[in-house]
Image (cartoon, rainbow, N blue to C red; front, top):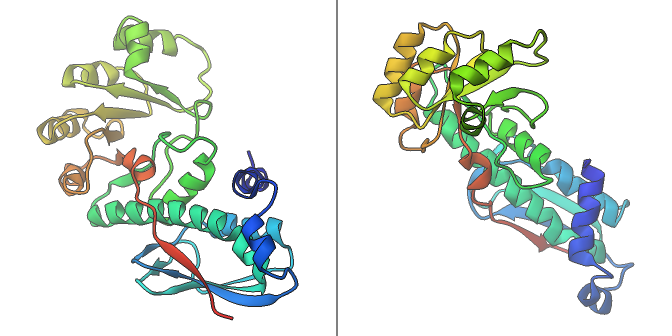
Length: 274
């Protein structure tokens, strides 16, 4: 679903047959100004859906951004000004702020993780644990937080997970079957849960190995035994408190589902100023 369609349905959800409060109280021809301010610090993401909300509500309404995606902001900062019909501003307010708050929360949490691994070679990755239909926006928010994107969906990378291995008779059998194909259309990553499975995976021409819920000691042993033959990705059990220790082991990638499934929304407020 593209951005225009997504915003269309978001507005249908909120506005429905009409903003009855605004229609009864505010003259649609009355013009005014508003500003969006933030009640906490963070990293901005969501300018595009915010703009699209007000474009669909009222094409004549102007949004003047004081910050842009990826910018840091402090508590009390003005994020943007709006100029146009007061009724249009009020009708689009909540939908626009919902996008901005949700996506800025993801960007802010991502930036916090990225800063914890500064000075190492570790790259912070997102996952597919995203809100249905919001994946593109949420993955963009990770980029705005200076993280990187893992695969977008099931179609753009082969990732052999534990359930594939269980269904196929174990990691060795699954990888033998996969590499028996003459043509593999994408890069291949395989998940391992033990050091023994890591040794099996290293026998195949995989592009990356995911260490699932490994302890720090196990990660260190995995880095040592792989000998930089294959890039390693740590996933599972990653927190803001232990990520520095994980990155210090020398792994190349750290994927974190919490970036998109547990980020707290940023509290933005829209205030009419004239």
